[in-house]
Image (cartoon, rainbow over all chains, first blue to last red; front, side, top):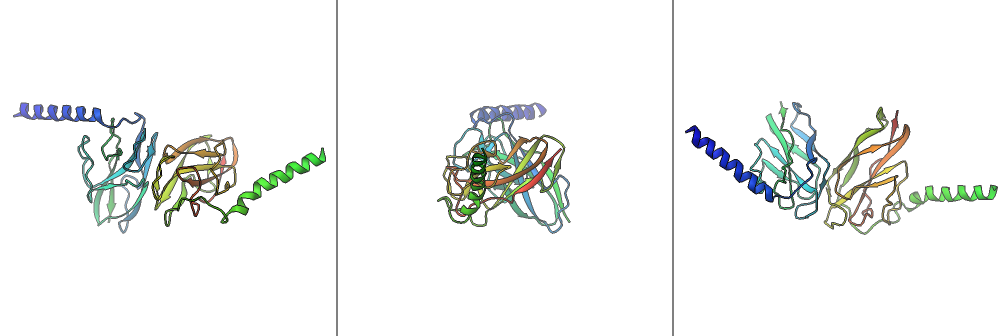
Amino acid sequence: MWKLIFAAVVATGLGGTAALADATPISKEARVYIIWPRDGQVVHGGKLWVRMGLKNAGIAPAGVEKANTGHHHLIIDAPLPPLNQEIPADKNHLHFGAGQTEVRLELPPGKHTLQLLFGDNQHLPHNPPVYSEKITIIVP
Amino acid sequence: MRTVFFIAVLVLAALVTTPFMRTGAAAGETPAAKNAYLYIGWPNDGEVIKMHRFRVWFGLRNAGIAPAGVQKPNTGHHHLIIDAPLPPFDQEIPADKNHLHFGAGQTEAVIELAPGKHTLQLLMGDYQHIPHNPPIYSRQITIYVK
């Protein structure tokens, strides 16, 4: 059984790597990070601006192919999606294909996670994939 | 000698006042995104900075970033104006040590300034480096580099 799981993990890993090799290249120094809020931040009322930070790369709207650029995707209360596929677009995966660098959110009470994932002109993660640390915020 | 000095002063005065005279009068042809709001996220106005090299964070709301040369509605790219007034709005933003262009779509920059008092201001430019109509620019802030 363990062998099967191991084989499956290896296969998935290899598949992912092969697909990533075709992904849009980006500087190895490129970093996305959440400027605001901070990890562990308590947000009373649940309304906040999320400020999306980017180092050593640039923003281009979706559909624009330009070296060392991409656009932000904010993942809310979800794990990282597969890095060899188009990033889903739903309430847990917000796309900023118009080149936005901030977004206003309204979150219900509870614990929430936020994570940024950079996508290329076709909403695919880059090679190497550029994503932020996942942070947790609390809405009392 | 005095005449030369006087002319120099006149030219300087003209350079300084020109942007203000043009404010509101002229602008580029690219329409600005409605409610677009540009601001310097860091440093804060009046900030005392102990390092010569520091990161400036560009804040933009209700509009998006596109690299220079990319024509897309409601987008533009950042220009950081250091120790200078706003340039004319109907012309390409100058590119020199007082007017830094971020045509690759950058949203922050590490800059190096000599000790002393400095001003910083952001101005959005369209795909041709010309300000929008109406122009989108931040408040000018003053910082002190130790």
